[in-house]
Image (cartoon, rainbow, N blue to C red; front, side, top):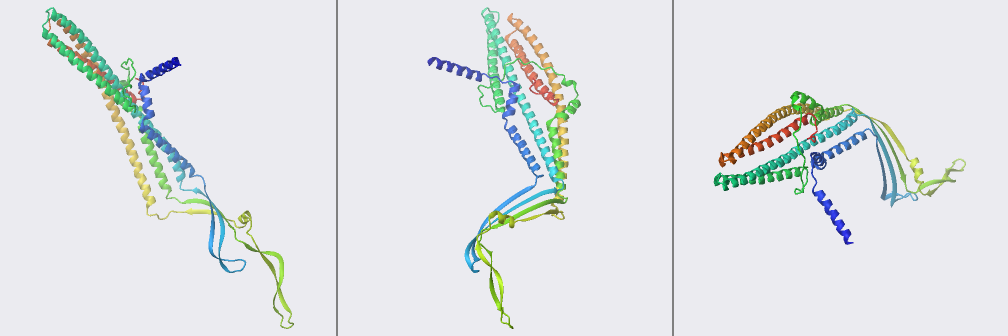
Length: 473
């Protein structure tokens, strides 16, 4: 039993440690963000609402059927069928009604409403896809920021490791009397500065991880980290395409443009629906009703009696008439009364709008304005896209040149530093000049890392406009 407990504890600990050690790739970050983002879930509900509206639009083509039933008790003065006198009594009645109505022509409003519902579903899909694109771009930016902070920390640590070696070497040179002790103090100050830079870099890395975790709606900041992978500068020929070429291709798939185009189509359908209100409508109807009474009734028995009504004056013969003998019976059976008392009504109803306070005409004018507004918004969105692509193209081109220049500067600073280090080690350079050379190479390395990730992000944005997925880093 004790062995089982130990084994179970070991397995749980191993699983927990594995879960804690999960490393997030860019693809998994984007997938998780799209699944858990609240705005995405809200827009998905909007799409579901659009599907329900389509169901309503389909229902407009179906007949309306309404069935009603009532049962009433009448209490008060009613004629007693036996005595013929008014008496306080209670009578009961049951009535049933049914009505069917169907639109034959309604100014094509039902047809246009259904078409609008389909367009609304499509528009919500474009809206959702556009939102996912924006979220993916934000996640990619946050992910690259973590990678930048991590590499910046590695650069700071490697610089400090080199300084530690210089510090040990300087201590030996001071002990041998080759360099003065002031040089050692200068190197120690440089090491202390680099230790501070490491602390700042660690803090920046933590903050960037927290920012990315918050973007993913993850609150376990301590155990959240991105994958350890060798990140190489991506090769791309996107800059060989002109901004106009990228723009023309973006128009074919960009969801924000398709969403604006769908809004124009929606506005046009709203206009068609409004125009339909100006046309006559024709509908057919059918009604059925019946009534059942629970009151006793007077019925004939089939037997007759002679009733004198007078005398013949000349003969004094009695004049008589016959009358059927009546009897009190209960109400007729329920379903017999149903068929005997039922009634039917059917026909056509034509409605012609003549005067409605200008509401229909104003609705048409208002929707015409909305159509123009939607078209203007589409043109503005295209203009914004064109400007964004030109800006992204120029930014990417400038970032690449900055990256190349930073690489050349780093190579030159590294060569100058190596030369200065050799001179310092043999006592031909003082510690201040050597510290300046080291500071310049440190700044060059930091600038190289910054320009590298700045170029990568701007490159991915430009490729994004060209249709290349963001998760392909």
